[in-house]
Image (cartoon, rainbow, N blue to C red; front, side, top):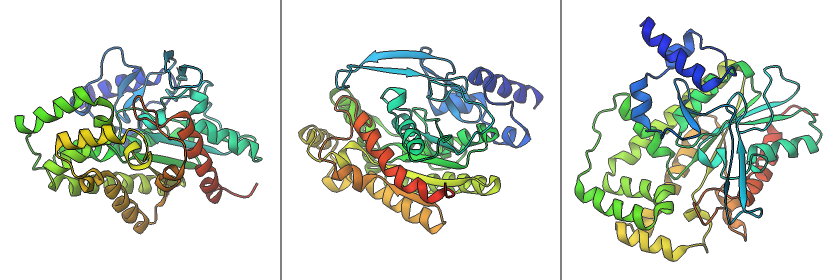
Length: 354
């Protein structure tokens, strides 16, 4: 037991670089061992991410990088992480100077945009312009993660004492991600797909990799194994219930944001491509709507628990311009801006008068 605890502390230290403190007893009880971390997702050596026993996957601290992106107005995206592994250019002090919001989510929150364009950073500027001069909105988004990981990210940074925690669910694959966690934690009855399942999926990944992994793969999985949709919904609800309990215990307000897929909102973009992919995988229009239906059912369940929810689907669907990149179907810089505008209206409801 001592050796396991030491290994977990070393893993956490490697992913914190002096940022988050060493875990206490409660965190140690929650932590995941190395076998779990690798089974959840296999990370490549050159990834800007690392395993973390609390958050499962975290951004490597203190990194800077950039890459060409033709759709971006500047043709390039510039990224950085601070000493905490947040998607922030500036360092994060433990001491609060004013309102502090911690935002967790997957790659859509992390952002396929420059740091200053991500919706947490845009929201921070909006709040400051609205009179909350010391407002701080921290982007703790990490690709490949789901709601169970968002709970871990909150646990990892409890020392920051956020006033509000925003957990951002992406309807296109977060249900599969938490179902994977449930199976790793012992949920029985995991299906074992055969070649008849994998062959068309491999062909789809080769021909349409982006839409396949940003929502269609999940719809395909739940068509082929219908019992898993309910299991995934239960798993995600369980993660958010745990987040709700932790927030209540620590006096943190909670807002769950539901982010839809490109397919569900950009109704004039790449529809022929989606249609060919759906036909190849044998998915009807109703089956392609699985992700949106699951999101709607989750919102109903969470509201029944008293959890505040913000569904971004109607707003993003009403936009005249696409909210997602064509290249990889992640939220675009315009989409991040629109989401920040929507959040500003809702976040003000949680905050004390100025």
